[in-house]
Image (tube, rainbow, N blue to C red; front, side):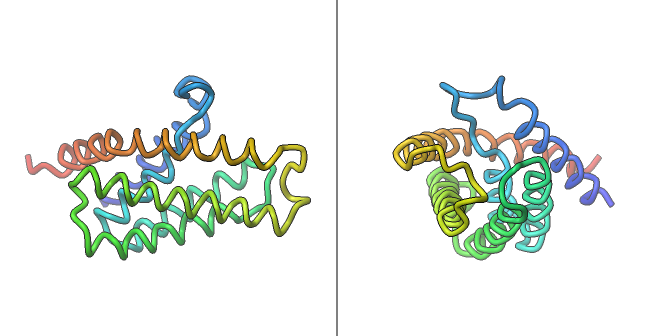
Length: 167
């Protein structure tokens, strides 16, 4: 029961971070993808199914509030939860280099998959943005997300240690 409450808490906190505080927590107009960081953390530290389910629910929530093609983020985040869960068995998640590399590759796959989807379905996205702008913005978002990831991993580790500490 304690674990379910913790996942509901993570869901609420990361929804608030991603959707409400973006205009306050950005770096030069670029906001990191906190949901992707959470999914990478859960995939590396918890079971694959936890990362998949929470990734799907967070992606579905993002899709509900987005005018873009419905379901793309839900499928991509669930897939990333699965693949980072597979990586979690082979890598030491406590290393900052592992955290950054997993978040980097997850972010690249997310960015490429999302842009490929809109390349296939051009009417679902905005056609007035240029490819160079998307590339620059995507690259900057990728860099900011990778830089922020170790700090979020540390905070999540601290929360888990605090919550699951025996009293």
